[in-house]
Amino acid sequence: MRSPASREPGGVKLEVIAVNAAEAAAAVRCGADRIEYIAAFEEGGLTPEPGSIQAVVEAVPVPVHVMVRPHSRSFRYERDELLEMAETVRLIRAAGAGGVVLGALTREGTVDEEALKVLLEAAGDLSVTFHRAFDEIGDQPGALRTLLAYPQIRHVLTSGGRPRALEAAQRLRELTELSRGTHLTVLAGSGLRPEGLEAFLRRTGVREVHFGTGVRFGGDPAQGIDPERMQAVKAILERFGTETA
Image 1 (cartoon, rainbow, N blue to C red):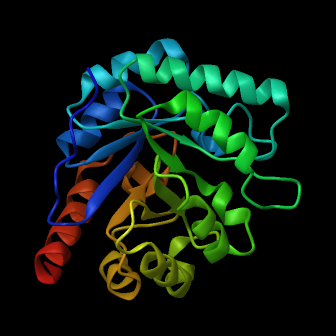
Image 2 (image 1 turned 45 degrees about the horizontal axis):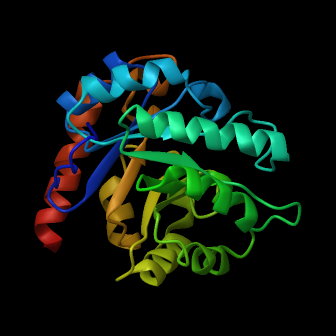
């Protein structure tokens, strides 16, 4: 059974990275509205073992979006890699996940639409997030317009082209305004912390945020979910959402 729709956390949704079922469950107990399930956190996230996906899906009552990224060398893929990724997407779909997280670029550093079409065909009715390959694209507004042509792509995970989302508030506001009223939502992530989050929300207008190390003990990807930091993030999101409702 596919995961149900996520809860509304005061109007601002929270996606949290998990590397196993226990972490996913801990994040949801603390208020996560969606899980991004990955392997190899230290490499920016790679495809987890297909056999583990169903366990994560069954561990939580919120959507689980699974990373589809076979290596961390680049976001360019050969034909055989692309076909393998498409098969992985089909396995993720069969496991009952709510979505997939993927992306592909051309050698020129633009959205690889041919690769995207192969992966979207495999995805079927899954929700698709175009991941931070987007942050290697120079013309991000142009890239967003390209992605708007694909209704399956519901999110773009981005730090606005900077190492940390907090450094790209103006770009993220521009992208958020560009996506307003469409099927696609800007999901801001990379380097977000409870500290400075409320000001970031006010400056950008984003309605969904993505947390990884920012809600872990010591900010360490090897450590578990920190309930206190999760609670701090949730309190900010709920307060901000109530004020701007």
